[in-house]
Length: 153
Image (tube, helix red, strand yellow):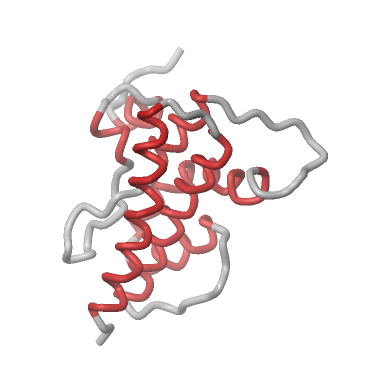
């Protein structure tokens, strides 16, 4: 059985990244690339917390899609988060290193990363990461509309 204190440590670290980026976004301080990185880090740590909590194979990787596959092998519902993981993956490299392709991290990009950032829904870890924060808080994201069957223009 997984040690709950270790899972809790991962969740607390994820919460720190998520809430720091959320507060900074709300304050309008700029630094949008760095905020996107922190949302990516939060998602990575939430996924790893689930992996540890369920005693799934743990790998030292930063690829959210790879981590998501590990989670979805245990709970197929995780596949619903693939689009969010693909989006957040771009923030891991592009926000930290010089790249030789166009990048632009704006307030809109940071808000999209906020929408894709994960937040656990309960302490049981059975449904964790089943929705994104923004899609169900604000109900106006593209992902939420698609899940509700609303046609996108």
